[in-house]
Length: 233
Image (cartoon, rainbow, N blue to C red; front, side, top):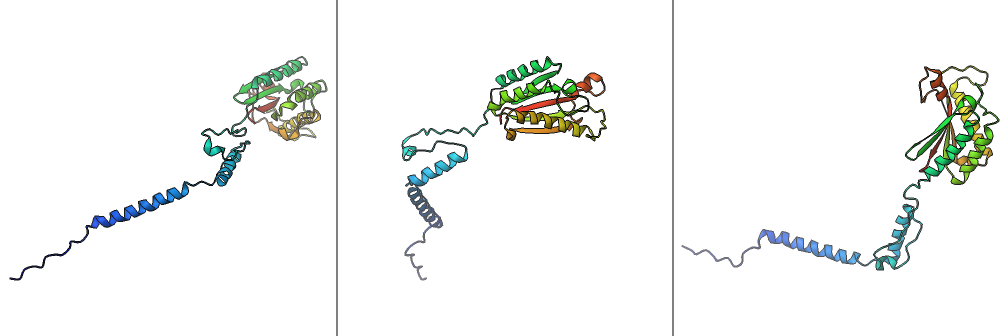
């Protein structure tokens, strides 16, 4: 019987091929990392500057200081809203309200978070069916506008009515009356020199009551002008 020829060399194991591929990939990966570790300071500073300006930062990062220093002083004044001094503003509103109450014009001041509302009830502020504030109240509204003009407050002036239908030559419904009242108060702010870009007027008619329309007292509270101030803007 013929003897089997002795195998000269055994074949390489199958796992060795995969292991060799893995080592090649790791070597390539580390070479790539090393090549990326050489930073161009000019490009890096440009990237940091772009990110800083995108988030509202004003201070530019000085060259070569980013790599040497662990803490980078950055100023982001526009990243978070600036909330104005609500306590001081409420005090001014209450002072104006106290002066108007001496004329028989009732009102109230409410604060909810960053929103402040001053309500002036319209019975002694406007003649029935009229959109023009009474002459004795105009100086106080103008004075209020001058007090808040340096603060650059965003103020929305809202006109509201009760649900009693109105029929006049000038106003077809309560919505038009409330819008005209809010607009005329806005004109007094403009007359005082207030930046009109910070003002808005809105007529809501009878659609946003704060009290019932089933009693005279409730209807009186629903006839009003509101000054809405957003402190976060």
